Length: 239
Image 1 (cartoon, one colour):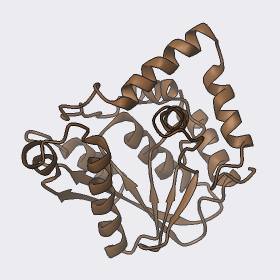
Image 2: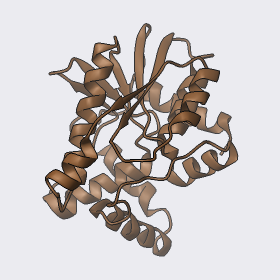
Image 3: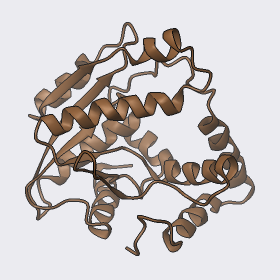
């Protein structure tokens, strides 16, 4: 996927769900993975022609795994004049050593988002951009059906009243395959996840199941996404 195509999808999401307003200061959560780096490239480029003026900064929550080098991400941000901060934490030790969690993903996500939200708020941001793409939205819906017995997924825009922050998901119309293609084409410095649970989660199980379903029934993931848009799930107004 070329940058122009990526920007087309991102602008449609931003316009459809009114994600960005004049004067916004948006924190982009950077894990070092393909999704967050693609989102950073998209929002940086969008700033140059989008009619509403906004600022971005990049924030990485360092989970505390050893031998993770964020220097290449810092170089990209410096070249693009994007403020970049790495927040040191001991999340990995708490989850894998102290608590020895058998299902670590939920607690890890909660702690990671807590650190990101707090830092963003303290540094004058009013919005946070998460790099969830179309596949993430469908996978989350399937996980809710299978494990919770309800039809639900996260919304394009979420207001966090306790923090007075708004979460936006500008990659919501972008397929994961296109994110992979974009990251490869533009040689983004993607970091390999050091998490010992990577590839062995419930989400990975659902991802593999959906991949097989889509092979046997081409277009099924897109139809599921359309069903989400057409549903009355909270936080999903008609675009």
